[in-house]
Image (cartoon, rainbow, N blue to C red; front, side):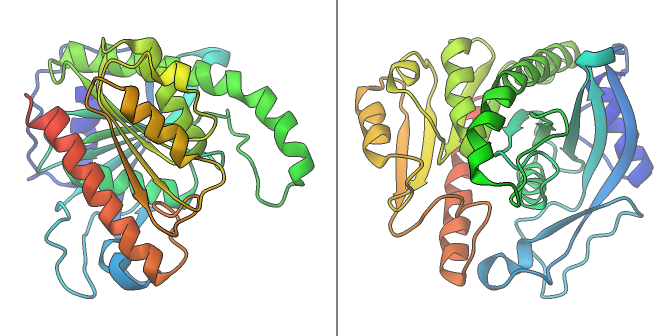
Length: 311
């Protein structure tokens, strides 16, 4: 089943009166997409304090209803649908979540790459929801074939785990990109995609864009990407937004600033003072909440100006 069909099936399951900017006909059905479950996404504003309290998300499979216990969030869309999908066949199948805005869909695709804790992590899903809430179609793939890094594991096991999972992630990213390109082109929706990643996924954003040469992706966002090589970043042909903290030992500010200086495609580095690793999608204090909110708004404008406004 194709992308357009998946979006409209989810929309129909959620509300018979919902409309979308993505239109039928359902003339293209991809055999490489299997829909396992259609989920609605609702807002849960009770578990995080400060700035994000009105914007926190909870994935659930139930009747769609958006409720705001502390007032209306004017930035949130009325409805976002989530679909669990499998890309590919047999042993090469990649599990993923496809999150789509229903009433304000701008017809643009975003590939979101998780950190080492995987695509089922609640913080990553919350962030994916929020991107979709701003009108996008977000594909969040399983990079590690069901075996993400677990916090309770000994750090002595991390490098061996990473060594065995890095190639798996690259393979799954390639499969996800192919599916997105095929489905979006077939549906006549978008000629250029966006790519966003955190930590491990933020580093992968750089690798993907360096290999892509601007053919499929029009813009990128790397949140505190790890193991970024300037020689690889130098090959990128599209603008990249780099967001990090100056207290992050895993993402060197100097390396990013050197990349920005040598880049000719309009890339930008934004550094938040006093912030460490993961502060945007895992804020740990009220102060980090505020900076996480600002970082999200910077990313939102970056994606809009580079993908939506350019259409």
